[in-house]
Length: 238
Image (tube, rainbow, N blue to C red; front, side):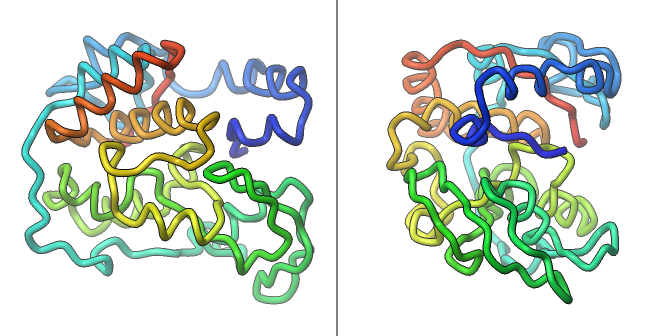
């Protein structure tokens, strides 16, 4: 089940806490270990869990100059219907993140429903008014290491439903304002969501073994200094 911090605006805090702390979630996957031994470097193993604070995770991200040579959005195949239930990745995110569930019709057409866009605190009642954003944009992923991945790895990244914080339903306006920008260039207009956004950005970069450039790591350190030093549990994708 995909669970995002934005749901706290709709669910009670107690319900959200209970869901995140449930035995099913705690027991899933391998036993977590620290970032020092697994989040970076040659000891990474896909499917392994690491536990790390936000600031430790930022420190562990390798700083590398970015290179967009050869990037094309089509090199990240999306949106796919991996489970063949008739709904592609975009629709799956919209259905799961709806504050009020839409009606799912033929060919996964969505009618009705209510969404809260956490980037700008906008309430939307039309699925067509939303985009599903890659928290770390495809072009940014390419710049940060995905250029060396296989086509299958890039497809998995572009359709990552296994990590609830990798993809997010937001207003089309906010997503298009963000475009391919990193955290040194763009932050959500909703100031109260920015620490969650930083957590998500760092978690995704850690999960996929992506690097940061100097401006990005400087911005992350500056921004994290004003945020709670949250403990993140990350399931490594590669």
